Image (cartoon, rainbow, N blue to C red):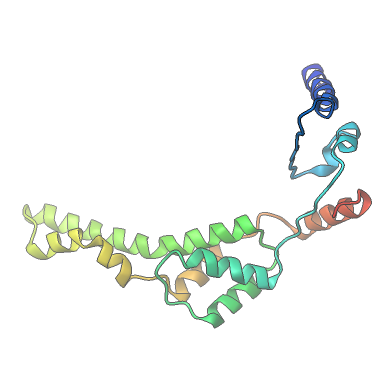
Length: 181
């Protein structure tokens, strides 16, 4: 262990010991992606431990519905059900990333269309009325290009979970052995 790291831990533990001695109440909230690496002395000072498991199927469906409701889409209930089934092992952050990717797909197609209009206008040295109107109606284009089932499924192909089952098992084992709620 590095000397600077050891001194920092010691100082943190001393400061935490002094937190409860004043007349004011202090609430300490800490989070760790690797709780098994925490120093035992720190764990003793953090009395309550809460384990937040990976989202279940119903929670994943609600997350998908919530995140994608912020965008125009043509998705049906069955699409959300299917995607919730396919996202087993995804964290909440992974699902948010999946939804961002799905929302970007229609935007990318609009960019391609606008780029081709730009190239067309550069080659003809003047923009046609149609090109000007298309560029000015980007909002309308967004509404005309909602997220489709294909966008969601293609996003699912290129978005993978950030954790693996071995790591999830390790979290659960740590939670069981350290009394996490």
